[in-house]
Length: 279
Image: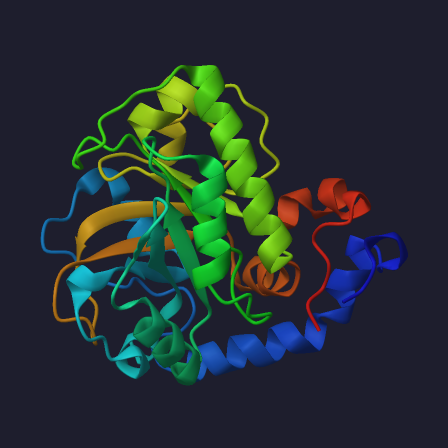
């Protein structure tokens, strides 16, 4: 790890990454399709998210519902990352998590774990569960905290906003302490409007918007990842799968992989000890 106080300034860092970026670009092109060609694959495409399908850094998120995944084929199809469900609440772990975790690593796909927050158990118990069950692998993407109302589960509580934000703070702090990386926040429009709107989190946002671009639905808020369909079709996955894009180009993606932070915020978060280059 490189201490943020002694880290190279971002401008110099980007110059120093020139060779890394060139190698990454050539490798991506060699897999076929080039960096910026459209990547098809959606059983029910919506014209409002057409731009997402032609953005360069594509990825998926998966859980047990996708069954056995061939991650080598997923990578060959042009996917650059995968987020996978790990834990939920205080005592549930996705039965495919460890299999997906190791198979994605073996295939060379950057992968991250997400925790689905529930509102019927203590945040401290959920944090303890996540840290017990999810490996703190240095080569993993930052962890994700999935923030939604639990309307499709037995827990249908909508606690007061202040209580929810306190729980979120506990969970984010525990995930960061465990992995050494600033967690990503995933959310949908309902939860964003009810709880997150106007809260200045330093975390990268992963926004769900399947019928319009995120800036239309989320007050023109910056986003790092965009989930644009839940009916995606990707080689190596037997079922429909959520598809996502990273906001930037190949240079920004490599910067994200190296620092664990949205490149647009490194100059702000770096002095706080975050966004350290992973050795």
